[in-house]
Length: 420
Image (cartoon, rainbow, N blue to C red; front, side):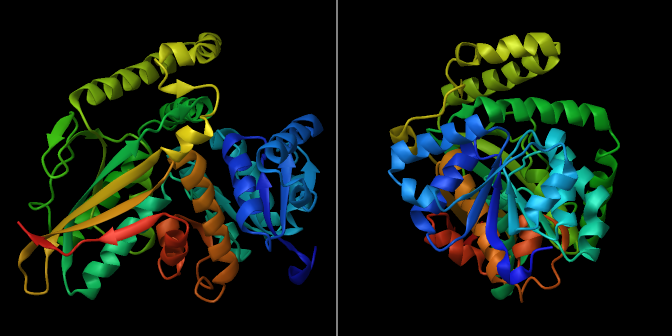
């Protein structure tokens, strides 16, 4: 095995994907001192990706310093041999339920830390069951959900709880409202959503049992059953943010519960919603949800045909091609975390935390992945006891990740508490 001091910093798995290409571009532009390598399934795809980057960024000299590895993900032994050359592996190959477990196993074999941008609860659950103890025994960090799904919200909730504790208060319940600004879904993300639904069906109701047990334990521990608002299953108008909102079916809620569990169950349950600025926007959101449901129910052969025409079927909400540079620059997100609780004088208050940043898929996710990897590389002392399969909040709770993210335009701001 390569000596630790001789290992390169970061390896990006699957460099020909949208996210990984943006990640490499960002590293080349902003991290000249970082030693980096990439993997790709074929030499042709690698050359095409490097050509696209060099044309857009005019940084062919920097690209020549990037180590390259032509490999698929089927041979775990071969992957592990490559991973031995790197301290942190960043996995961008989705759907993760199909390819992710082998890459996690290879990272553990190589004693390399691992970061990914999965938004698939089923994959995270399986990874924790299969590799939790193994990763701990090998002194390896496996960090899931470190992209837009679900690092900003997870870190935001951890930050909120830390600030409330500093002020002598207590949190009783939480709700989050995520507003996407000019953002659209690419086909890869859309396919991942469908795959996640497939995996959810395979797992059946068994995965819900531990979540229900966890929720019950949290309720008893906090003794706040009567104070906690129930999840709103139907779309509604939220006067607090002056927007329409609907329950968010993504991985955020699952990741937040896992973080709470890993940190001792001390956080209240957070109900996660997506917010839109108009009633028409809500209708559009419902339409997209119905489209996902219809395509999910199709046989696999018909799904493939639907994917070919997804731009038309979704009225442009889902794209087979990536956005333009201008579209990326005009996109962003803003998430408000509303926490009901009490202050140090036991008065009822609402704490408000706002997490905001640039385009979720093409800027925030690459930044979040890179900052996660850098935090692991630079915070070895504070992360000494943080080994195993973890969520972002559980891993980085005592680190300087918020300071690092803020420097990269992902901002966390907690308002003074307001009486209600």
